[in-house]
Image 1 (cartoon, rainbow, N blue to C red):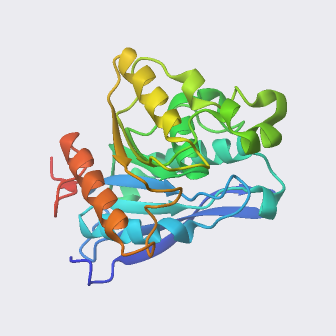
Image 2 (image 1 turned 90 degrees about the vertical axis):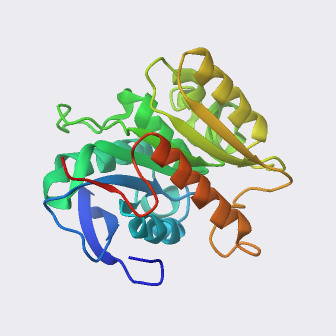
Image 3 (image 1 turned 60 degrees about the horizontal axis):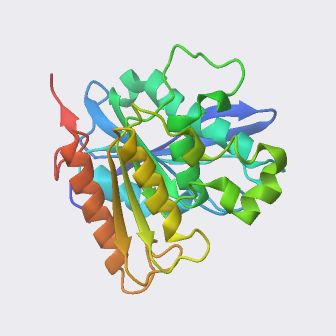
Length: 269
C-alpha cells in the first residue's frame, strides 16, 4: 500500500468511564489480516490536557499504516470535555496501550512490538505510560503490560514541575506526573523531536531528560529542529518539510529497534 491508497479504518472502544466511551481509531493496510503479528503504535494528541482531538495524528497514522504498522489515534479525557486533570489522562494512556496488547491477537498486532507517542501533552502521556506505573486505572488487569516498547515524542512535556499550566492542573501532585523524576534503568528506547525556539515547552527539557536517560543506560535520541516553535511537526504546518522529516526519522528509529522498516511492519514467525 502506498500513501495514495486508503488504509482500512476501524474504531474500537478501549474503556468506558461512566457514560463516556474512549476510543482508538485503528489504521492498517488494505491487505491486513488478523492472523498477522504486525508492529503497532498508539499516538496521543496534544492540547495541554485541556483540549484537542485524535485527528491531530491521523496523518501520521495513515503514513505508518502504509509502512505496514497498525496505527492507533487515541482519545482520552481532557479538561474541556470531561472536567478532568492530567492524572486521569495518564490513566487513559496506560489503559489504551494495555487494551491493544490484550486484544493483540484479533488486531493482528505483535504484543511485544507496541510503540507509543504523541505531541506536547500527548507526548507526556506516552512517556508517563512507560515510566509511571502508579497511574494505572483501578480494577484493570495488571497481568497485561501497559508499558510501550518504544516512544516517539514530539515536543513532549517531560518536567511538569517546570510548566506553569501543569502546576495549575496538578497542584501538589505535579511531581507525581513528571517523567523526568521517574526515569529509571530499563526504560524503553526514545526518540524526541523538539524545536529549539519552543517557548511552550523549552528545548532544555528534552536535553535534560535525554541526559538523565543516558546516565541510567537507556537509549534516548534527541533530534533538534533549529528555530522551530511548538507544534512545528504537525501536518499542514508551513511547507510540510518538518512533518515529512519527523516521519522519516520516526521510520529510521523504529526500524533500528525492529518495530518498523520501510514497506515492512510485520513478522511471519
